[in-house]
Image (tube, rainbow over all chains, first blue to last red; front, side):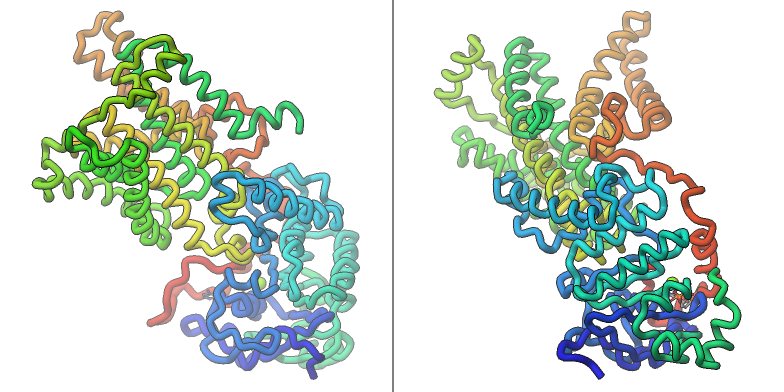
Length: 259
Length: 380
Ligand SMILES: Nc1ncnc2c1ncn2[C@@H]1O[C@H](COP(=O)(O)OP(=O)(O)O)[C@@H](O)[C@H]1O
Ligand SMILES: [Mg+2]
């Protein structure tokens, strides 16, 4: 079912926390140029799924592969180097750093100068820094928040901060973008902006989206995986999933109204 | 580049600093130059500590002990009338030895947080003077090691006379060495803090999980901050050994570590200017206060007891009135320096996000199963 270049594949992932099974036998694949939506009620295991994909949580069983290669001992800081970016549920911004610096951290792995050229402030380091700054500004500009570059996140509206977090993920030019509830706290208008933005990203990368807002999920995703109590209870296109009776009883029935 | 931007370039500041240092050290007498040397070594160590604590969020109660490593190394190399190395070489060796010790501690410290880190570095501060006693044969025990400061080379004397129009006294020679070391150390620290390395340190300080997701290895960032900071402490120990002409356990007690931390807090975490300001305060305040006490009619002993009291009061006042430290009182807001985390407006957080924040904990079990490593962090 995968195309020429496989994306992120999870095979039969099980995660338990003490007695609680957070994920049980979950398999899925995020393919290039597609948006894969992961939905499910609170506590269904969506964030845990991302944590497995990022190496924060090691699954009790199951395997993870990226571009056809297994990732048995993935560590979170390896992720960026593999071409995977993630935004965190909540913001995860660096509060005592400017917006531009926040985004520059996302570009960190592409910096070519090292410790010594930094220490001596060699021209190489300065040039490299200028190059990354330009790139960070370009991404902020693309998201329409470049005017906030020198501000501190805490002083900015929530929607702007969300975009900064997204810019930090995008500046790394990932091949896979993991978004954990990017629309939470956004207004309807901001949400539809986000929707078109996400669609626009698919010509550059695969997107995996955890989201509660069904309107957004239905309009943006190519495929959906529905989790409930750590199990996949349905997969398919948004339309298929919407009509699935198991989904309706477990999830949609109670919460379509956008919490 | 605007004039302002050129002026705040570290190299330009360093050059200006050198001019000021030469002018000041020329103008003062020997007594003051000894005090200024003290300010220099406190300033160097506080500069390293402010990078560690202010930029990387690691606390160290053991920097006085790291200074001792630099000082004892210096003393061991300067035992004979004929030094085995030129002073510059001694400085390099003292810095490198301390750096290596710092790396070992940094590796252990990188796994520790908050009070645990404070405790571990506190143990270091307490243990190091003990080591000097234990290896009394080599390290001189309670008495410590005398440091023979070599005479300034002829060309230095000539150059000093040419620039300042005076003969260079030994204590001024050491003062120049101390301040020269400070300028070089601060230049390096400033370059690191404003560059990519410093950005990584700050990212790890502000949000570990987000930093890690962005590809920063927490361990490497923490250890590198500790190593850089230890190197500064080693260089400070070198200057202190030259100035005091002695490396003895009593000079590197816990008090020294706490003094450094006080300097850093007084000046404002993360700011090198602040660290220097804090060092100045710690050097000169006791004198000023004691003099004031005497002229107010206190006897000498009572007057000397005033200084710690005033320290404490100043520290409390700074923490209450200017939590970002003295250096932030005049600095314009948002200059890119590490300030205090600004409190965010709760209303900006949507009610929904807040609800999720709360709901998130609802179904989480409080117990972690047997055999499972406790995770100290996990992204949400
Ligand atoms: N590190 C952890 N330790 C213990 N329980 C956890 C941990 N992470 C998640 N859980 C639990 O696993 C379940 C799934 O959580 P999560 O993945 O955050 O759900 P979602 O993101 O779908 O709301 C919840 O019951 C949660 O409390
Ligand atoms: Mg979640």
